[in-house]
Length: 227
Image (tube, rainbow, N blue to C red; front, side):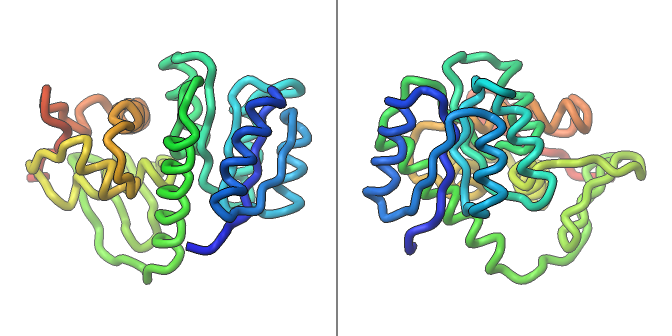
């Protein structure tokens, strides 16, 4: 995979410098902003392939940055948070983040997550349109348009949420492990990240209902076949 353009929005200069240095060592072009308004402006200016975004920023926070940059076009977002807060994570995923890392994190894991998100983005853009409609109870997923309805009313899922639910829905009643989902939906080949799957499932449930995805304790997740 050739180098891509990445925007890092992080107000702590040592962290921003370390993240940028690691990503540049991977061959990427990296631009850095240190507050919310500058981050939005930089994303608008350079049109990056991915954004690494801290949740706690001056000006306005990373959640607002994520909302604003996703209005015009989808761009993969890896969110960084110093707080292991479930509420922050769910809100971040709900406004369009694809994954998150809790500080402190290793440079290796950051690089692996970024590489996987970029591969996934390339795959989404390169693949032809998938056809067919899948139902999960009162939820309908249209693969061609990537639209989701609940009892006929449209519901917005992020690209990752859609891919996760669609992966389970086309395999009704089959239990998928977290490791399988990380590999098949996110493209991760590293063992960590199971909590990312859990957080995305909670976000999907918040939008579509608690019963849309079934937890199989100690194993993973499944959806039931529609009648």
